[in-house]
Image (cartoon, rainbow, N blue to C red):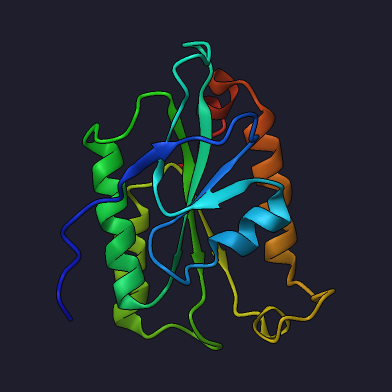
Length: 169
């Protein structure tokens, strides 16, 4: 599998959105997370509008599947963020890792996931959801999804200083 070498592009952030959910690859699950958490999604780093106050930050969460290509795409996006390739008003909350299949990840992917997610302020692991896969209108979500939504809503509305102090080690 060829390595992902280019980072995500940039786009104007939607006005007034409380949370930007960025999928680091197609099919990552970003639109589902955005729908559940009340945010907007895309596959590009958001850039605040010039008329936005300089003090306004954009809460952003990255989303990836746990397959090798998804994890490597997340690594590139996190490297881009850490290297200053993202607008400084972007407040990266963390990385959401969505299971790419039911069952336990192979050891090689678990190890890769741990290394890559170590570059994010936080990480959330979401299990496989058959009801989401089937497109159930009222899916029975595992508790990890409900916990993620609650935490993202809380983090997106918290002052930046408070978010920084809440970072998980």
